[in-house]
Length: 296
Image 1 (cartoon, rainbow, N blue to C red):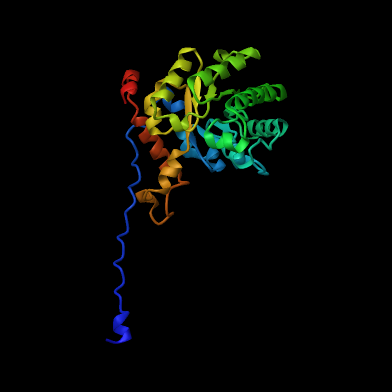
Image 2 (tube, rainbow, N blue to C red):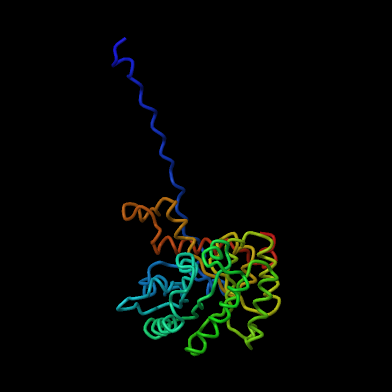
């Protein structure tokens, strides 16, 4: 047997290419009353703030500070939007807020004046997920104190901006303690237009998260849910005043592009058509009867 025959090993069969899941289609309804008004669509692209397709249905957007910081010129908003501080990624990377309250307040003031139509701006809160606590080396109680201090600092620096206080914690007792901290410094959260509830996005599918949100809602506090996905929103949408989500973008990366986008881009991770279709499908999936949401 020749050496050529001895080592003539057949090539392995090629693995079949796994087709990506199809993109979502546009839902029949495009307007959803109150829940439509307060479900902010997250975006990496500040230029979306001046796009007509979002203005047409008054779709509110959510843009992080990091996406606006340092720009010489800013878009002029044609639809309402909220400013996210980008605290999760910042603390995960640095373990501390490297941006001073003075600089953040100045930036928020510029966005408010030059972009316009800002509904609210999140404070420089301190999240309580395990990875963030590991990055800072601090305790939940420390993060709560720093979160309350951020609201006080920013209100002192520019009280005319629509600062949104945030409550942080891990358990129901933690969140109630954070509410008490605000009360101790003279802040009645029931009088605030909306209050962010942090560190629940990864718990949003659980009964514990629903219990936390329902308890705080029963206290008369209007809550904003950061980073809520479809499953979580179906459980608690009737208990939230507002929410935001960038889940559509991560969803799009792992799906085929929409039919009208084939040949335009590989995926729709930064596609406004996809974002609107995803949002419409999400809102269309929410039961009209709040009682049905509890069973969803």
